[in-house]
Image (cartoon, rainbow, N blue to C red; front, side, top):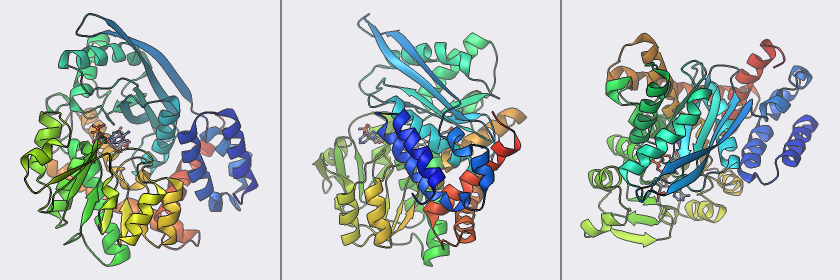
Length: 446
Ligand code: NDP
Ligand code: 2IT
């Protein structure tokens, strides 16, 4: 790093957080990007802004005991990382997956701070979750786990304090069970979670928001930076969960072609274009593996333990998980002529892969900007809950479109302001950082 201040803070973070590679990866990316904002702005160092930003306000870690279908008691670990509330209550999803660690939730909470700032809504950053895996669990087990999880989490959250939502392994079903338990314990009906069912304070368009928002963002980048559109483009999408499915739906609506989707077991390739109704049935209704797709569609192929990035595409949308697009994948995409990579997942592209893409002049959009549509509509759900009014799908979707266009504009404006040209990565980090940093300065030492 060029800035001695940023380097000193990074070295300190690395020393104080051993065994947290994902967290250090996210911190390094942000600190490296925001150096231009530190130059000529000694107030940030005077107020120890970086030192305070890299340390969560609060880390809550707890035991969750629940009873499985065999009557056996199971124990999982739960977390909530309340990272920064300078510009609003802590806001961010809950992840239930066997791979969840403190490092992963800290990286997600840290990223969330800047992402939420970019939405233009009053939301601070947080993240939480558990190493509980919903795969292979019965409905009853999922419900009992969610209730047990909320039986501890409820005391730390609130509609004006900390508002969790979904992430990997947490969708409408899990949010519903957790909301029911919160309401039972607190005896109050408030917007303490987002992504709720439409009958109890949910927002139309939240389910689709991250995937649709990713495509609105990408469409705006195609228009403003590349004088192009989705029309006729081959678009590779990884994953087949909430973000992937609705990214595929909007891509198809905008005239793109989707031939591949995946899950952690491998990927499917359909030369005729993915039948999204079939993917939805397999993933959202039957909750089966993606390989079931190839059992029904005759021309489709399933490749076990392979990644979608080996197939040629014009646009790549990684929508599964962190570090899923590695340097070798990036090189393969580049040699196959990829023009744009926009992240639907959080930190899906490794630093080496980002470097390879940027060196090859592939347009690269960081997740904290391009996947902000989900939390943006969560923010709009909070507004509707406060008003006790439900907006139409069209109203929410129109606001989402404006927010995503504005994130592109803010990022380009920030990168140009610092003389960096049209740089979506540096611009997003700079715009998000400056907003939160100034709010922290204004509010005094805390
Ligand atoms: P889902 O649980 O709905 O889907 C996750 C998908 O990614 C599944 O297809 C899953 O496959 C795959 N996946 C998960 N973990 C791994 C892994 N370790 N290796 C390979 N594949 C994996 O989650 P979402 O769609 O909600 O989230 C996807 C990404 O988008 C995450 O990075 C999340 O943080 C991010 N995100 C989500 C938002 C939201 O609103 N939901 C908002 C912004 C970002 P399998 O079923 O086999 O595990
Ligand atoms: O990573 C994310 O932005 C999310 N999982 C959504 C968070 C939210 O509060 O809607």
